[in-house]
Length: 310
Image 1 (spheres, helix red, strand yellow):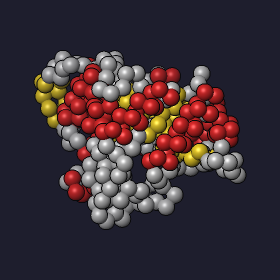
Image 2 (cartoon, one colour):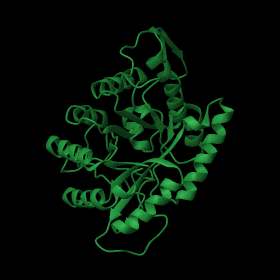
Image 3 (cartoon, one colour):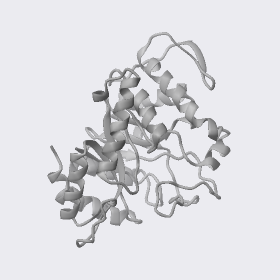
């Protein structure tokens, strides 16, 4: 099982020196990937329930800096050598597919094939409103984009006609280093995301605040079952996941739905994810201050990571 780590692309600590140091350190420590989050604009008032925190409130205040996800990965492509670069997840309905696919291929080529595209439908209705994008059409919009992008990254003369996107006889070069395309990891936890993964994705990539490895395994079984109905090889789809994690100074009472505890406890908890078939786990270390997160990541890399590498 590979392990990745989220970078500080939001908050007061973010900046070129912090990001470069964080990515290079993760590369040296042996993490397989670094991950950026995605946000275009943060409204001052958010009434939409945030599904990825215990409080169900969005965790980044609107006055805090939040850098663009793909711009950060382009920057990091130039200051790292081997670590993979991922976005978790790019909200596709916010961007026209002819635009973001060009940016993605540019990063992928400049990084010599290290990009992973986590993609999703988005959740914040107020952000959709600010961008003038129809919130309730976002599922159809992402499906059209996923239909089109394989053609863009593969074909010479490309045409597409959908409800939301239409283009005719366009060229798209260069093609990705990774063939047949940049890996598409589909975010989302429910039935629609599972079905979307089965039809279009290279990996199911949910973010669970609370879950058990057995639940992940069961959800992934549904993905693979549906892949057969779409004429795809289920073995070609991976199980991946994002999880918050906390490294504690001393052992703590264990909850099988939460990743927290001493290094010894985390080794045992994470081995259950590996046994459940998880190929990659992207970890978001839950310390409010970046220096505290640095300490947690360093301890994890020294005392946990060596036990989980295949």
